[in-house]
Image 1 (tube, rainbow, N blue to C red):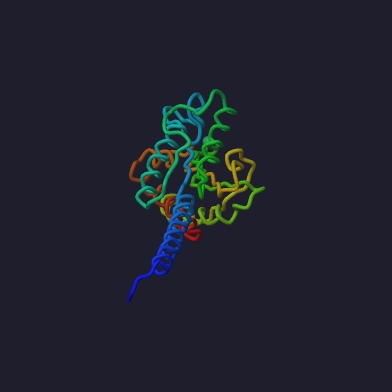
Image 2 (cartoon, rainbow, N blue to C red; image 1 turned 90 degrees about the vertical axis):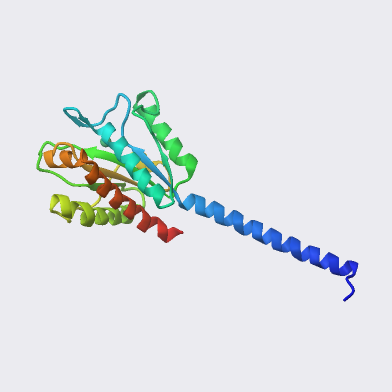
Length: 224
Ligand SMILES: [Zn+2]
């Protein structure tokens, strides 16, 4: 067959159309995939704000430790994890500046989910368990209840002997940062000797972080 100028022109046009389509597809996939696989983990407190404490056991230290351990597990599951703080220091001078800086981290990386880790304290040392909180003006009650249910079956039932905890709504600055699904997980009561002992046990923390990660995966994989 004789290849004419017209043939060459047609082939070039077809090649261009194919290249443009492939490029667009790659762009769409990388953009959507990147966003849906980014999780922000917020280690509660830090700097001069240690949060709650009993003796030498301090909330800010435990939340940072848990944040590192949860990050490692989620990264193994191919998530991109951004920590609001990765040292003992706060993100700003004073509580307001610190909280605003955390909000900026969350807004800037457009995550699919934000998990803020905290430790609880109560006057009655018998009160125990891992509890999930959400912003009750927001739409994340279902996600909070889903995470609570994973934590009930995987952690509270095994280590506390109860699996009937419900998630709770409230007014929290950190959960109002963006439209992203934002949950606060109170990882146990520092005022309970049993919970405190568990939180200081690396093997327990791995189980707790594994359960939180499974909750994250179960919720975010639906949106992929
Ligand atoms: Zn706290």
